[in-house]
Amino acid sequence: MNTHRGNVPGLMIRQELQQADRALDAARQAGKDQSCPAEFKAAEAARDKAYDVFRACHTEEGVALANEATAKAQALCPPQAAKVVPPPVAPPAPKPAPVAPAPAPAPTDALSITPASIVKGESATLAWNSQNATRCQILPGIGAVETSGSLQITPAEATRYELSCSGAGGSAVSTANVAVTQPAPVVVAPPPKLCSPTVVDVQFDTNKSDVKPKYHDELKKLADFLAEFPKAHGVIEGHTDSVGDKASNMKLSQRRADSVRSYLIKNFGVAPERLQAKGYGPTKPRATNKTAEGKAQNRRIEANFICE
Image (cartoon, rainbow, N blue to C red; front, side):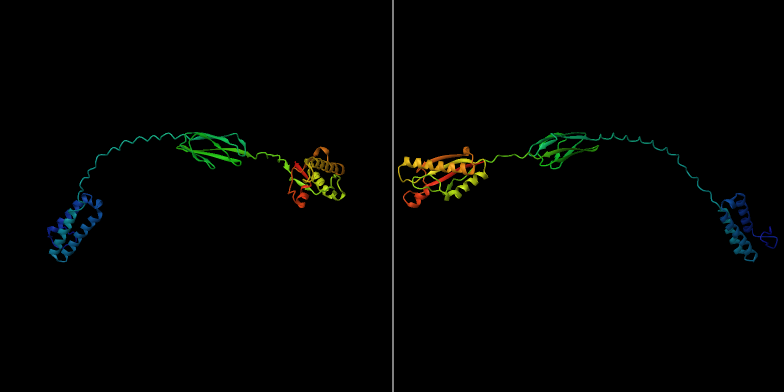
C-alpha cells in the first residue's frame, strides 16, 4: 500500500521502497543515526533518491536505488568485535639501588730537609713520606721516587723542593726549602817570597873595603827595595876572584860585605836585625877566573832576601 512517502501517486507502491523505509526506521530506533550519523544520512539520501527516481516513472531504477538504500541502512554501524583486553601486567619489582663504593681516602705527604741551611759544597738530607698514595715525584731535578724515603742532596744555591704524590683519592703537595750560603773565603798566607839574588855593582880598590861615593846610587836601589818590603830580611854576600890565597880572600869578602851592610844601616835606617853579612871569598864564582872579564864578575856583592 502506498504510504505516500516521497509523494508517490496511486494506491500501490513497490515493496522495495517500503523495505528501505523500514530499514531506516529500524536503524533509527537502534540509535544508529547517533552512533554513525554520516553513514545514516547517506543511507537516508539513497532512499530519498530512490523515491525521486521511482516517482519519475523510472520504476526499475528506483527499485534498484531502494535496494541499495536498504543495504546501506542494514549495514550501518556494524558491530565491532569485542576487544580482548589483556590482563594488566604487574610491573617488575624495582631493582635495588646500587650501593656506591666508599670514596678512596685522600693522600697526604710530608717533606723535610735536614739541615735547612748548608754551606755551598756541603750536603743535606731530603726525607719524605706519604699515605694513601701510589706515585710520588720530587722537583726540581730528582723526578719519580718511592712513596717514602730519603736521599742526600748538594744544591749549588738556595732551592725550594716540591713533593707531589697522587692516588685513587686525589693528590697532595708538600714543599721544603734549603738555604745555601757561600763559604767564608780562605785566606791563604802567601809563601815567603824568595828574592832572586841581586848583584850590587859595587867595586872596591885592591885589598880595600870602603864604599866609594860613586856607588851610593846603586846601594840606594837596594835600600828602596828594603823599604818596599819592610819585612824582607836576608844576607849581604861578599865574593872575590881567585887572585891571592883563599884565606885572605875570605877575610876580604867578609869586610866588604860588612861595609855594605853598615852603609845601608847608617844611611838608610835599615834595621840591623834585617841584614846579615857573609863573606864567601872565591868559593862561589859566577864566571871563570881565567879571564879578566870573568874575574870582574866574580868580585861582587850579592843581596839574597826573603820577601814576606
